[in-house]
Length: 451
Length: 180
Image 1: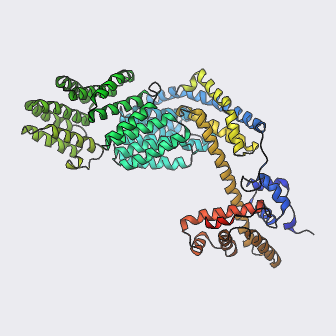
Image 2: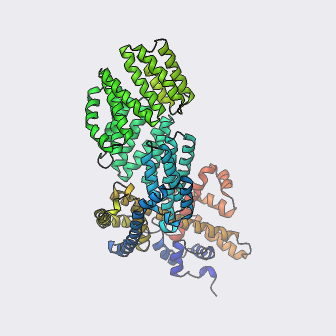
Image 3: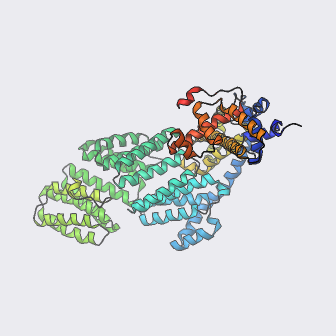
């Protein structure tokens, strides 16, 4: 009678062993047999073994994949049909949601299955990004809804790894909205959550790169410039790897802004110029405007006024095309800065006053403070001490009624006192302006540290 | 959001899948993906493309890159599942309490013969694991590895052992493995 270990497993069993599809008990017997050094069974198994685990595998002809392509296509077409239907419904569903107060929206997303679709979740995330700085509170609500909805999506319908990707994207959108609302701690936690989800996802480089890109913005705002730069370098590597020129350009623009914020103006200009070459203003006008706007600001800083003026003239139609109020205010502010730097002080004053009114209307206290300091710069150059005192007197109550932290308020009090004593110089104005820009995202910074 | 609402863009997605087929085939052949498993990998990549279409600026590059990655992941998973199956089976074999002495002796002989073809490092590591029943931390301590790297070293040795079982008698692990 032959011993158990001498009995050859069937070819099917060996193939299934090679594919790790046997039970623990079946593996036990196959491995015991293979340990005897059975060449016949090793040969059968070798055909199934991963490359490098056995002899060279027989070549596969392209025709061998015909069946796979045909079946994959069939599945793709039927999924696409379902996806199209869901995509058409998404805007209407968003509208239905939009008519409800936030608590009711959450309730609907928790309980009503008709909302549980990929396109609606995608749309909520997209809306959150679009609202961003324009309406931070709504952007936060949209992102929260996106997160809630992403947790309801069916992994059977969309695939567990893909759903994990979308959940990661939703958490990253929430983190981004929290960053814009200056809640950095919450943003950090949301990014950690997004990273954990991403590890369960498809491993898509693009998804990862986009999340890192947003995280780099958070580090930039937290003035963790080295970390922001490191993340952006990773994004650049990933973007090159997937051949996404647009992502390369976006990362370069962000890198430019990080350099600019950290005072590395020349490098900022270089990155922004390089990034702009890869941006298609037609397909991504918002990014194009952001890149050009920052480039103009840094060109003004280094005194390259003619180039700044030319670039502003070329970008004006894009600002107008985008048309949103905040961008038009920024355009006017920039025109004021250029007029100021070109010595056209009356024009600068008129532009700054107009921008100041718009910012005050929107209740943007911090920006109003920064703008007022630009206006103070005009007065300082003209030696208009009386107007300076009036401006200083108007600033403080305005900021006290808005959410301006105490360090910034203290700086404004310094300004007010200096104005009262007719001691405001252009240097002090610049110093305060730099300080307010820095402590906007880092209230801990001291006035003198900022210089 | 409106990309796929437009018939011409739906067509462009279709055309992309048709136009990229030769490159996709080359990727599958390059990675020697068995035709019966290619369907799942292709389908997964194409469905992800469908759902993420609006995010992707260079769809063809993305699709090819994603397929390559999925092929790499496919073999990585197959290798690790196979190695796990071999490891578990050998641990079960050496732990069988009621095996007669002759069977034990035969198992020990067969195991030593297979291990004899591995590098000295893997031989020592697997002897500690199977012969003395050492856990990863004990193996690390005995062999002077950091606990953080022992898993990686063990996995390499298990892969070498599995290669032996698949091509026993034909394959000899290169000695420079010892210096890895």
